[in-house]
Image (cartoon, rainbow, N blue to C red; front, side):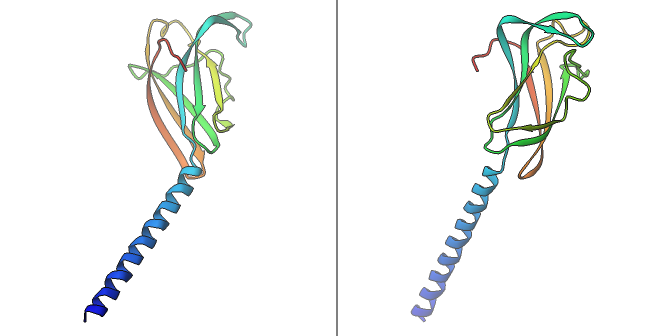
Length: 153
């Protein structure tokens, strides 16, 4: 009886060990296929002069940067901006066909001059960005609160 019980316990331990190894393998594969897209405000040391499609020139002190920090590329990257009150924010230097971006590779960054259309958002500091993308694990989405201020990235 003791030999039989010892065999059952050993088989249970072996099964548990195999299940744990399989789960860790799946987790490593999933992590390797993941893109981690985020966004941040980058304050420029000097104002960037931006010529808009209508020919006017404006100066941008900040850039909104989309950044893929994950090990895998992000595809079909979309970005939506909103003010703190939920009102949609459009950027003057953003073309209608610019998003979705086809691809942002690992550690790739995509800067957008912070030039909101109109004067309604000039004094505001808090915004929300909704990011959507595809990676090796399927569709992903992230909602980030952002605040303009000094960055050291």
